[in-house]
Image 1 (tube, rainbow, N blue to C red):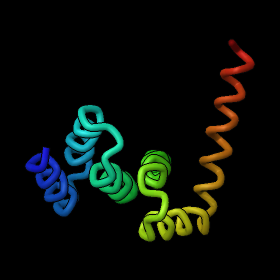
Image 2 (image 1 turned 90 degrees about the vertical axis):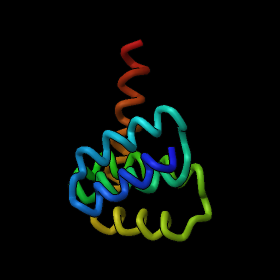
Image 3 (image 1 turned 45 degrees about the horizontal axis):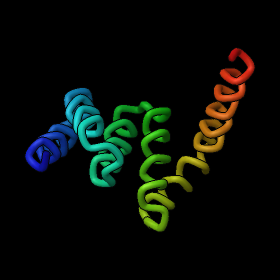
Image 4 (image 1 turned 180 degrees about the horizontal axis):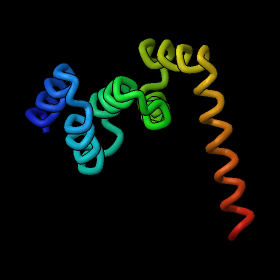
Length: 102
């Protein structure tokens, strides 16, 4: 896992976000909720301009490391652009819709 994590980091530095994301998503399935993987997923999807996925992994990262200063600042940045609050409301709306349909 460590070697794959390093490979994903290098791919991210080379702006090969799709390949980096594939590796990180695979690692996250094998080793769920590991902060090092979640943080890199936030960064990769943010750089790939997929803010929805970045926010989802940021939320998971915050759950795994609630006192992390980087996570709090990233959440503040997402909130400042109005995205993080929108994303949380969207998730609640989806959950409510699922409950209505079941």
